[in-house]
Amino acid sequence: MLYTIPSKIFSFHMTKVKKTFDDRTKFSPFNKFMKTEFPKVKADNPEISNQEAFKIVSRRWRESPENPKN
Image (cartoon, rainbow, N blue to C red; front, side, top):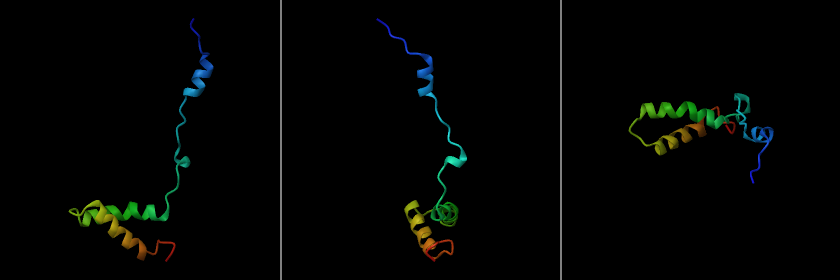
């Protein structure tokens, strides 16, 4: 015996909701800083690893005026 599923129920559960720009989480001050400073560090020192670049940017963040703790 075959059972059929009403199309209204099936289509309701199968639709995807697209996120808009406003639905995304806002960047923290640290993330904004990392987004701008990381490429600068890598451009100045292309031979260093990402791990080392993150360490350098983290040190810059501690002394940065953009840091809310400063």
